[in-house]
Length: 477
Image (spheres, rainbow, N blue to C red):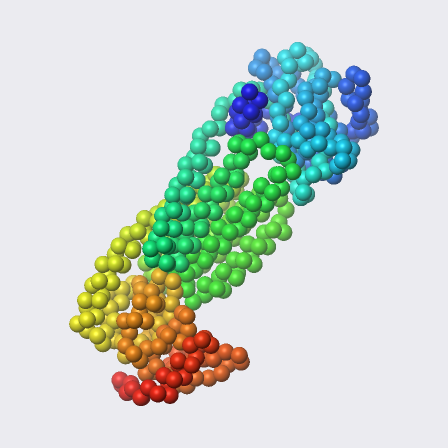
């Protein structure tokens, strides 16, 4: 019965805050006497009620309600609590004490029904005995709510149901991307599966207050997990968008995300940490998306539009971001990407079959699906092929480059023998090679034009042998 009452009250917390009386508190010296608490030297509390690391007695005057609805005292925070109303003991949550040894930790949320006979016509004194020695971390606002309000309230089941639906959709998306990754081994699918899984897990953790009547020392762990999951989602988002639309700067963008999102750990309050991590991640992800729009990369424009929408809603309604809209926006971003990924893989399969057919008839050309359409690129004009997950960048003579919807492993078998893989992400046209040069503890391959290419140590012997043995190939004018 108490669990049902507790869950019902939690589902109505926003309404409780709206309809509950605003209470002004005084901090006092106190002790429990035969007739209830005995208080002295009471002084107004001008800041937040903070029992962390100490024993605290507080009191307030509650006005008599005009209606006959039953009233409860709702207390939420990292503290054990004991309550009296007009000298009548309402109940205890754990056991407050003067030391950590004397305190028995209570639940994070507690409700105390107020008997109708306890009310007085003019002025009612509410006294709370609080202590918090087991919180683990120090919170800027340790008591999230202390309110007296009517019961029952209009239910808050709809927002909770929306959160669960979003979590279910995200879990389904995570499974779908995991299947795609198992079939194709694409890095983008793995990142999207992780994004969906992280967002779904955060939705579950956010809802624990309604599902689990946990002890207040666990609250620090819960809030820490929420921030870690938000930070992980933000970094994964930057990694995904950068790999799609700015592959050459992917490592730089991930490094920036790690630094910026990690720095939110220094912000005060877990809500600010969580919202800050999400906003910074989305803002950083918008940079490669904007670059993709400038380069006319397919899919960049809707991605940028969605990220901008996320930022507008986050900055306009920050209090809703972590609680609800984040899950809706995450689901709204990931689920369309899942559908696009499935469609893209189907088109890619058909495109590869057509490309193989054309390649068999035109072995000196490579069929490239670019932003301008389908283009036949002479193989001799390709300087190098740089891998970017599901796409590759073709670096051509004259400083031109094209993005091609293919994987590096596949092109390594399709290109002529004059092309050699010199790095895990680079294939070089040795017909355009000029020299192999040492750069500190690294090696670089210089071509007839363009930036030098990195050479990995494991592939250096094969490159040296190819450069020494392979006969020179005439370069077309």
